[in-house]
Image 1 (cartoon, rainbow, N blue to C red):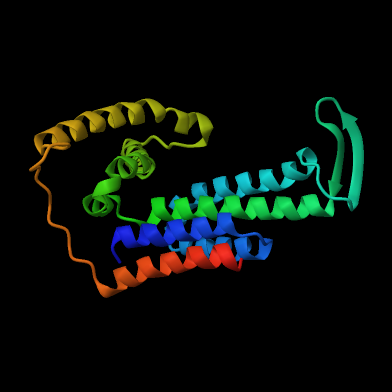
Image 2 (cartoon, one colour):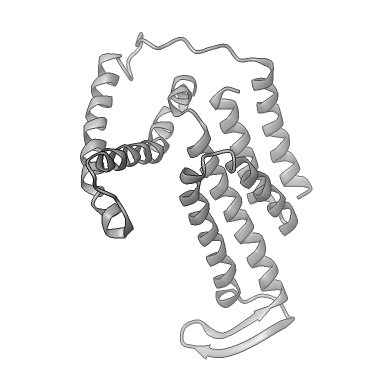
Length: 228
């Protein structure tokens, strides 16, 4: 499948989750995206899944404490300045579950995008969104650079462990990203980026399954808006 068609599918799943009004619908989409993310290598997917899970859990925990809706209290707490009285209602729990599952679906969609797509092919095919594709390509590129630095240090007998050891990678990562940015700018200028008549590598033609994926993406958004 072409990366552009895969992006359309992932974006449609995230959009359907945001449009969903029932927690089960958003949970179904989040579960499907979670299964997609499991196709990535375990070492790479861990950070994305952990970050998404912590963010979604934070929304679920904080929403009932800062939101004031519903008339069926389950717990009544103390009065806090500015926030008022802390309480938890069944309606607030339902809202927290929906919003946390929405956030989880969006985070998992981005994780699948970062972990499974070929970003170089995506830049080649999605010409109208190249600035956005270049920006989102940064995280996977930094991740590959960090893995290369770790392997190089292991070859010299240095084991990178703990927060302090990984923080030491920030300086070489910054230097390599700046160097890559200069090289990319020179390559874009040499190929006449932004001017008419610029060169480009021929991209493979769209196949039937690519077109079907785009149509399925539109259908997923409609289903999310009408039935989830």
